[in-house]
Length: 448
Image 1 (cartoon, rainbow, N blue to C red):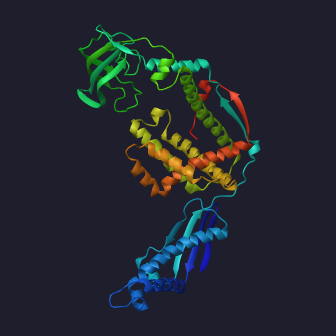
Image 2 (cartoon, rainbow, N blue to C red):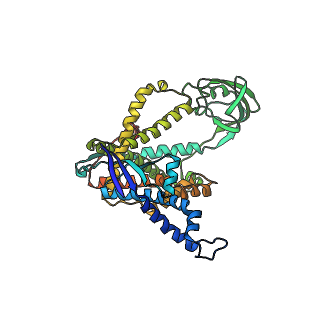
């Protein structure tokens, strides 16, 4: 076998491999010998089929298998010998000439192919002790817990049917059918819908026009969808709703006591407060984690500068760009609507792609050196969480992940990343900083 490096430029490598025809034939004959002892052919006893006949029947397919096996083995062994890590699956190129390919399969011509890849560059991992992170913490007050309790109480407020006209805070039960230019539109109809007047949960102007309505009334409600409405096909459009009022009910008095907690399946009011506090703390904890992680990743990005494999960056950019353009298309918007241009957006998302690739390589290196692994139990829990998101389709979702290694990888990657982040934080300097709820919940400018 002859191995020749034909390209070594930056991170790009290309290796030409030539395996003599006689060596390929030796492998083929070895495989055919194994086939000869197992195959059953009419007219011959088991194990007594002439090699020439076996070669005639199976020689070409056997050589095809050897070609594929040889490529896989050589790509793996050459990288190991060179002590290189390929950034992505190596690309294999060989002859596209059919006549030449037939000669290779017939063992009449040497087998030549090229392995092309980019290497992951070597880089030094920063000293974690130099990393400094502020952990934003919100103190959950008793007042905030009571606000949540009051909100729950209000949501469980009883209503009593009344004969008079609907007023602010009353509940109206109705059927409605929305039309644009005289034609019903998707999502614009409902039956038995409950609406609390003044809650501002419907299109602006809708609730105001039901003030004064009585049970049995049929009304025509005219509104305009906001320009920034989530559904692009409705944004800015004028609509007419045919409304039939079935019931008007006035709000009853609600008391915050143990009985309220019991209607929610809890022992008493203190238990309700305890549950709410846990939920609020969990919500803030999740946001705190995101802020801490963002600071950590920012510093890792800043302290690790090295050449990036172009193929990885290109693939990451294409993934981001496809998602962005799909989102814009579904929303019926353009880059101008987002106060930018396509050129500027490409520039920004190119930088984001580079950041993600760089951090991905850094975290992978840290995780490898720390011998961090994702356990089977952790993977199964992640799979279970995914399956739960598709009620009624559990079996199909499970089968999808079971038969799709890339999908399983998508479950493993975030678990691995979180464990690496935890490993780094153990050595980094982390200082708590009390902040307001608004400061904590404020979104970062760019996604991680």
